Amino acid sequence: MKPACVILLLASATVTAPALAGPAAAEAVAQAGNPADATEAEETAPTQRARPAARPTLRTGIDDFLLEAGALPDAPEASALGTLRASAFVLWQPSRTWEFRAGARVDAQAQAGGTVDDTRWSADLTETYARWRHAETRLTFGVQTIVWGRVDALPLVDRVSRVDLTRFVLDDLPDRRRAQLAARWEQNWDDFKLDAVFLPAFRGAELPSVESVWSPVNRSSGRVIGLPASPELAAFVRNAQIDEDDGGSGGGALRLTHAGEPFDFGLTLARTRQSLPYYRADPNALRLTIVHPYNNFAGVDAEWVSGALTWRLEAGYTDGVPVTLPNAEMAMASAREAIGALEFFPGGKDTRVNLQIVLRSLQADQPFLEIDDYAGVNGEIETSFGQGRWKAGLRFSSGLNVHDLYLGPRLTFVGWEPHEIYIAGHWFDGETRSLGGFHQDHAYIAIGVQTRF
Image (tube, rainbow, N blue to C red):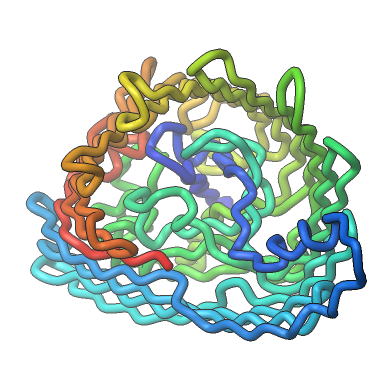
């Protein structure tokens, strides 16, 4: 029997792109707080006398805290979920030129009340780096979170970030990214910026426990997200051992951006290993091995403002996307993707509407099992009321040519800044190969508190 190949490629955002069909890359550069930015204006400001040298500064603090509990009314694996997340940092700036930062996070996730009780504790580094900056040059080496792109939810040009799948799409995009080791050079020339990133030691996406309801491999049903269900696949998945091979270099990428009239734009070239996992199956050894193949990517993006409307666009071509043939072997395909987004504030600043349309086409020399063409819409509607002390919002996505649906309503009290108290729901539905179809039994209602400092 030939080794079978099973592919998993999760869309990294709000349940819009088909899974297992290639990475759904990522968003606008997410920098950790950088007090050095405050000194940059001082360095360039005119002065009448010599300034004293900048005093060394040392800061410590909490980046983020989340405590959440919720219920799963329909899931056979569990009826209750709990999440704890906390991160802290130390930042030292001995001068205007140098900056050193160390950060760490602790996560705990638990589920109970069903066929699979599971508790998982983990620790990881957050932003931990040494940074040197002078004039228009900035060099950073260490563990970093680097997210490129302009659109929310599904930025295609995000090719160097590490995806966090431990809570699927429950969180906003910045909370679905982890830091990884990188060497980064940022260079500014007037309105242009060059961003070059090399990943010397690759780490794949942070995955939930295989027993978690959010795992891309469902042991209970014997399904793999993005693939059609079958009795043969179910029997294999329920018993296979799962390993991961994510060592070695992660590749590199270049991004050139321009800010100014008539519009902002960017060009991105990358050869990087996809953060999202590909499951390579060996039925003889009863084993699934998670691997991260290299993708070649070229993309463009733009943003412009027209009156009260903000328009965003990303388009890209990816080569080396793994797909699964009907005989369970793996083949490589190419992906052509485009996302258009519109953001506006109807009736004033209290309400924000962000709409996006997603187009994706996979092409290979042979028929394959994943969804080949996908068109969908997604977005978010958010409004504030009660003198700004309350927020109500809805995240959503829907396939246009494929039945694939996600709804995420949320009500938040923000009157005790920086604390947020919320109640949220998450509902999924769709055909078996879609993200919504895979999680259609995992409707989730949660209450929680989150603090951002």
